[in-house]
Image 1: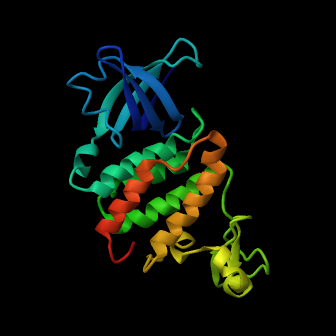
Image 2: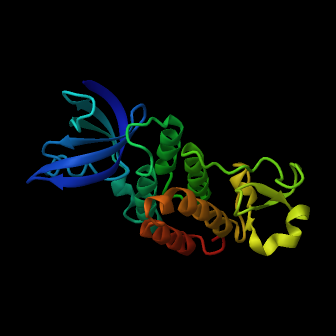
Length: 244
C-alpha cells in the first residue's frame, strides 16, 4: 500500500531513540498516523512541528497497518509564530480539534480552512473570528451542526440573535426575548463571514461553539475543552483588548 499526499503536522511523539510517530491532517486521506525514521534527528525535527505543511508518502504492507512516512517539507510556519502567543496557542488548539476527527476519514473542506487559518494566524483580528467559525464547521463535519438559518419558534429568517442550548437552533429577537437569559447570543459574524465582530461578539461566539463542542463531541468521550483553547482565548483577549 502506498500513497502521496499533502499534510499538516498536528502531532508528533518520540519513538525509540530517534524516530517519531507523526500525526498528519492530510488533504485526501484525513487524519493519518505513521512512523518517520529519524524524525527526532537534527534534520527532521524542525520540519515535524505542528502547523508545518509537508509532502508525505505513506507505505505499509497492509492498509490497516500504521506504516511509515517519507517526509519532505513544503511550508515551515511554526517558527513564524514565536512572537505571537495567540498564534502558538492557536496552532495547539486547532491541532487538538483536528484530532477529534475519525482517523483516515477525509475532510477536504476542513483541511482547506485549517490551512488558510494557519497562513494568517499571526493576524489576531482576522484569525479570531475564523477560528470560531472553524469550530462551528467542525461541529457540522462531525454531525452536530447548528441550525442557524431560521427561527426555531416562528420560521423567521431575519433578526436571529439567539441560539437555544437545547436544540442548537437559532431564535429570533422577538421569539427569544422572554427566554433571553437562558439562551446563547448569536453574533452575526458566525452566520455571515462578511461581518466583523465587535464588542462582546467574539466572547459570545466562543461561548456558543465551546458549549456544543463540549456537549456533543468531548463529554461523550470523557473529555473536556482543552487547556490550549483557554490559553488561546486568553492570548486573544490580550492581543485584542477592545474586541475580546
